[in-house]
Length: 112
Length: 114
Image (tube, rainbow over the protein chains, first blue to last red):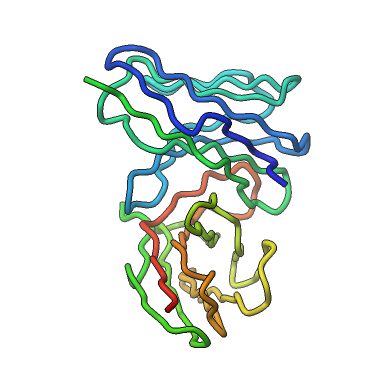
């Protein structure tokens, strides 16, 4: 039962352009969403989060959008840089239990 | 500020043995989480500890267990190892039990069961 889905296994973007990574969820109890970046042989690195009471959160080049009615969130990276090449995971949690439910990840390649 | 640390980085065991993985959280963090990332699978929640107590458990058999020490560090024990336990085991920490706490991850322990 995949409660968090990242339907694009990979994405290739030119340096300087926008990268848009998408994530869908099915559990309406999720109220906190996070994006992590992961390089090979390293643990996930926290990027940005958003609470369900908001529909947008920005941090530098990273912006997360949440559409609760569609149960969809997206991560925008502008401008994309070669160092952004990594696997990006979307994660969600419900109010109780604190466990994060992760998507399968999307491999982002930023070409210079 | 030091991040989450895990040891060992790699661990090789044979089927039926026991494995012990260790985690030290970020200073000031009281909650420790364990996740498994098996090959070809996403990160799966294993366990959550806070203030020495198990707070939540994922859908894993009882041979996966752990504990949290008074200094908030944690151990994950896997008994009667099976081949499919081969995976990257990630530890994360956060401040307190309140929801919406960002979890920060360590580099992981790669367990290989032969």
